[in-house]
Amino acid sequence: MRFAIGTVWRSRVRKVVRLFIGLGLIAHGLGHAVLPLRGAGVLERYEVTRIIMTVAWSVALVGFAATGLGILGVRGLRGIWPLLFGFSILASLVAIFGFRRGHWVAGALIDALAIILVYGGAPETAAPAAEEHVLSFGRNRR
Image (cartoon, rainbow, N blue to C red; front, side, top):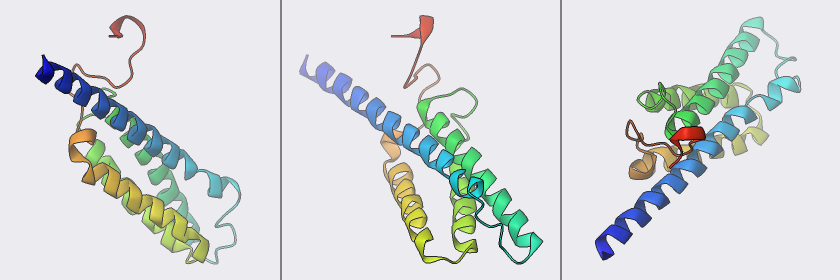
């Protein structure tokens, strides 16, 4: 009986950790939309720089949101979220260091924290099994 309770407890803790990491990555991805909407990068000297920054922000926004959804167990993203996360981190760092301003250090630290939480917490963030969902609604709710 004690083994079964410990297994259930670990399973629930793992789901809660995945929930927080997944939602955190979705929020971090949406946070990449804030500065372009406020006009950051408009004063860049070269058009190529503006295009690169726009593409980098877009890839980071979509990639982090998709990674968070993959960690939460969304079908179609379960198996590819580690690849999406890698592209998101790369795009985010390109966007951050492309502006060469000191207040962007916070964004780099958040990216570093995301790397530690996602890749460092491998058992908790491992892709859920085919039938396991962190969040479920409707008939499939357990």
